[in-house]
Length: 103
Image (cartoon, rainbow, N blue to C red; front, side, top):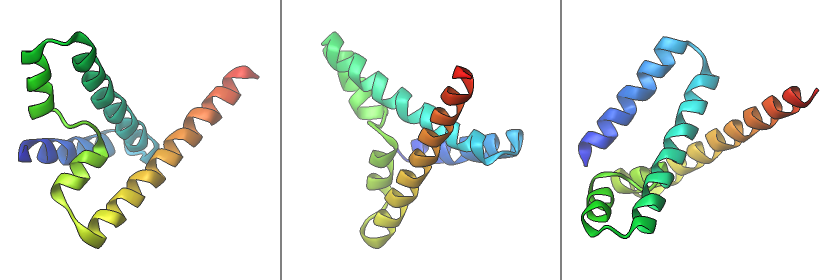
């Protein structure tokens, strides 16, 4: 599962360089988190054992799951708090967009 961490870090760097905007990285992390959760929910609802096994083995359940897999202790706590702050920014961007859309 080391490939997941490498792909995630590379994807974050590529999004940051390509869009040159912190907001884009925050949106990307939100999209990835929602994608992981949707895939796991679909796997559990379908009830196909081979598909569920594949999803459980190769696709992380969330970004926090990736952090928990590759860190521990104080470093884990710091990374989880950074992730929480990024989700707060994501929520703020979504609410701001929604309010602007309503006007």
